[in-house]
Image (cartoon, rainbow, N blue to C red):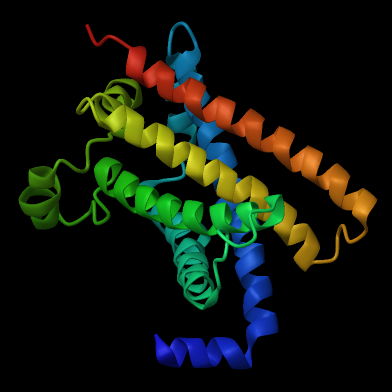
Amino acid sequence: MADIASVFGRQEFLIRRLHSLTGLVPVGAFLTVHLLVNMGILDSTHQTYQDRVTLIHSMGERTLEVVEWTGIFLPLLFHAVIGTIIVARGKRNLGYYPHPGNLRYTLQRWTGVIAFAFIFWHVFQTRGWINNWPWWMENVTRKLGGGLFDARRAVVTGVEVVQQAAWVGPVYAVGILASVYHFANGLWTMGITWGVWTGPRAQRWATLFCAAFGLALAGAGLAALYGFWSYHIS
């Protein structure tokens, strides 16, 4: 970690901008699409959700795996590692300076930690990480309750994921809210980092936009979660 921190110190300008950029695209963009896809479960026939999942997987498992690793997982890991360094180097003094900006800064860091832990667990629970290695799936993933999702039976297995245990639903709610807050507030911070909104008036409008966007996305995520939680498998 010391070596990484040393590199971070020498290339801080570039790394911070790459960290900000990966938080928006592709990680934030994927979060938005993922929650909107999941809202298909609210369709009365639930076919919309299956159709959306089928469309995504129509590119082929190998191609999808390459896209996921290059476009989602690796940028997410980069964002998480750099974010961890920022959290470790940052001085959290909310008790001394409890103003809104400091509260947002503190929430941004903690929701980042919660979101990363949640995403790591969510991917294991649904995909099992190494889903093309039979020994791993049978001897590790299955025994630990992971790898539950099957794209060919997206509705049923998606419901089984959320209804796996009584505590899973609340964990998903916390994970969704943490992820959405981290993205929406990070979007506001990104505008500062990249000089999109620098003046007080522009920042006020950006605050309203990011808050409205975050509330809408959180509503979409929680609505989809309710759809999976309330579905009764016949």
